Length: 461
Image 1 (tube, one colour):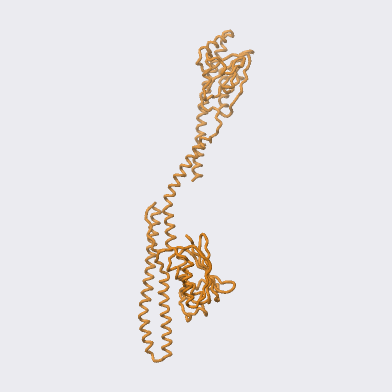
Image 2 (cartoon, rainbow, N blue to C red):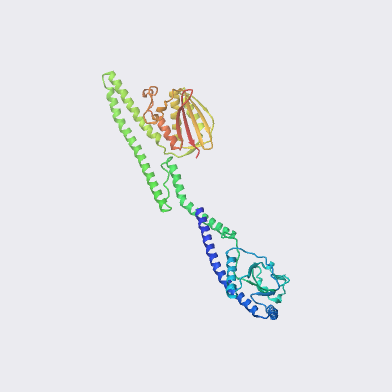
C-alpha cells in the first residue's frame, strides 16, 4: 500500500509538472514574441530620429515614468552578468533574434538576463537601484519577487549602442527546483500518512473478527463448551463465523453422542454379564466354572475400561490455577501408602488447567511408572513460555517402533504388560488426550541408563 500510494503521488507530480512546464513554455513563447516586436518598434523609432534628438526623447521618457522599457543610448556595450539556463531562456533568445532579424535585419543583437541588484545602466554603468526615482525605472523592480530582467543591446552606429531593459511577466521563469520540490515532498508525506492511517483503521476493523475467530479456534481444542462467536462483521467474516459456530455445535453433538453411546453400551452389557456370572456359578464342572468366570472377569474389565476412557476424555470442567508440585506430592503420598517409591524435584509457578483431568493424567503416568518400572522419578522445570514435567521409571522401556501404538485403546505390550497383571491399556491414551486438550504435548523416550522417560509440556498461555 505504501509503494502504491507513493507511486501514485510521484507519478501525478511528474505528469503535472510536465503539463505545467509545457503550458509555461507556450506562455513564454507568446509573451516573448510580443515583447520582441515592441522592442523592434522601439529600435525602429530611435533609428529614425536624428542623432541630436535622441537624448531629448530619452529625457522626456524618463521624466514621464510608467513605461514598460528602460531605454538608453550608450557609447559602449554595458557588460551584463548573464543568468539563467534551460529551454525557457533559449526560447526567449531565439524569438528575439528571429524577430529582430526579420523586422530590422539585425542579427548581432545581444539578448541577456540579469538580476535586478546586478543590473548596470548608462555609460557610467550605474546600478539600477541607484537611479533617481523620477526616471521611472521602478517598473523593473517587483520586490520581493525580483524576477530576472531582460536586456537587449544592439549597435546603432559605430559609437552608439541602444540599451533596452524590460520584464517578462512570467512567474518562476528560471525555476530549476525540479518536479519534486520540498513542498511537494511534504504534501506527499501528509497524504501518505493520512491514507496509511485510515487504511490501518479499516484493516483493523476488518481483521478484528478474524483475530477473534483464531482465538476461538485455539480455545475450541481446550473447551467445546465455549460460547459461540458473535456473528457480525463483513460478509466474508460473517460467513466464516457462522460456519465455525455450526462446526463447533456439530463437534459438541458428536462428542455427546459418543459419550451416550459408550455409557449405554457399558450399562447394557452389565446386565447380561451379571446373569452369565450367576449361571456360571451353577456349573457343576469346577474347571469349566473357573474358566468361564475368568472370561467374564476379563469382559467386565473391558467394560469398565470403556467407561474409564469416556470419563477420562470428558473435560467438562472449569479452568483453575493449581500448584503442580502440591498435586504431585498428594499423588506421591497416596502411592507411598501402597509401598511405592516416588521422588519429586523442582518447584514451579501455578498453572491454569482443569484440575480433575490434570490429576487423572499425572495419576495414570505415576501409576504406570511405579507398576512397570518399580519407582518414579519426577523433575519439574519451569520456563517463561512452558512448564515441563519429566517422569522416569526403572523398567524395561518401550521399543521405538511401539511408542505410538501404546497410545491406542486397549493396547498393552507383552510380556511385561499383559492384561493378567491388571489394567486395560487406556492410561497412556487418556493422559496424552488430556495433555493435548491443554495445548501441550506428551512424548516417550528410553533413558540411556534404562527405563522409560515420559515428558509432558504445558504452555503458559
